[in-house]
Length: 212
Image (tube, rainbow, N blue to C red; front, side, top):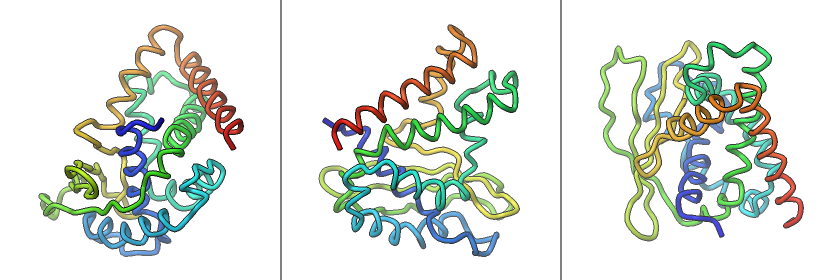
């Protein structure tokens, strides 16, 4: 059974697909305007796609690779999750960590995407100065029950604003994984973390194949 937290993080993944549209937009577009403009389209697309709702990992991976990843600073997200150990990793290890972390996130919450049905997003006023290079866009997921906090950490780049962390139910995604990753690295090193992530992803893929 999909627990409530996984469902909400899945919604975060889906709604953070606010970056689904083609990245041909003004680089100086406000971050909250970017999220507001595209999130409606994305939520509608997820709700209308039976394959995603059924947890089709291959379809979700294509969606992530082609539409989401080009507009997310995933290198920063992975580096932050790995923490201080990131600087000790080789370029090959860094790429492996990024690949396995991305797969982990997609596979962990792919099934929960089927729970995205009648929810909507409500945004709070952006508290930021024009010169700020990093901001937090705050929103709430509204549907059945009480509203749920969903925030985005975003940074301004030459290509426009990009997301690098999500806050669901008061917990930042990167910080949550940093604790887990640190424990694994301290016990088995960076290669140990890569191996653990790879094994976890293979196990998830096997479980998905059995239920499909």
